[in-house]
Length: 296
Image 1 (cartoon, rainbow, N blue to C red):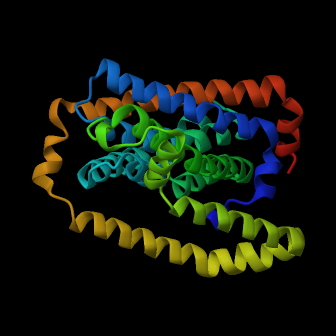
Image 2 (cartoon, rainbow, N blue to C red):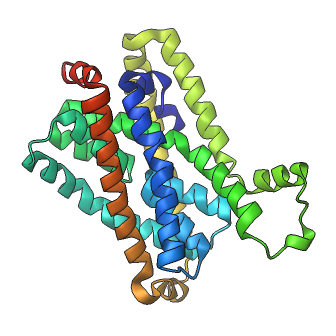
Image 3 (tube, rainbow, N blue to C red):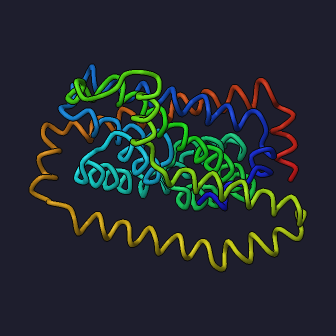
């Protein structure tokens, strides 16, 4: 995944795209977690966090990172992923149809899709329905959003270590060194590989240039090797989760319908805040960037 998040693609969409993701995403995460904690009073804070991260950041990858950071149970991760996939399948079809019915311009529509549909593949498919401009904007927004997974995981690890997990308070060292060690222990290490791959492939892209990179990286390495490998690794991950899942325990997590309610309310918050930010950035503050994207 890191090999597909390239610096040049982030720069192409500029400040509006970065604002839509890096500002909106943490705001939605905090609001959704707060709703689950204070209003719904979710019994499991870790389930609340995993679902909030899944829905607000970027689906399955964010859920896995958040689950590692807050040491959530496998059943909680499975439940979050299952709900996410179910709603993603619906939104992948419904959102582009709704956007087209409103006659929304492809830049705004693509930004809205990229910031709210969970899966990267679903984002590309939904954007494709609206045309190449919406597809490219949606995919780039989602790629920028993927970058924040590492920051989110670090934040969750810090919050959990210092505020939530108090059961081992007597055994923990609350000095700066001890706190940093606890955060590092909870931090999902695969995020480092994600960042490293992004930097390496961005460097290769810069050396080869646009035309050479499209042939060697986009059409060659990514489409020919990395994307199929990523698909198989995700398949193995889901299979492993399934093999270790106890469905009798999973059913208990649906008690009172709170997880579904959390996801729906969180998604409504995400849709509203993302649309407002995208409209503000692409139509009010930086209309010239929208015009340049429309002309591509």
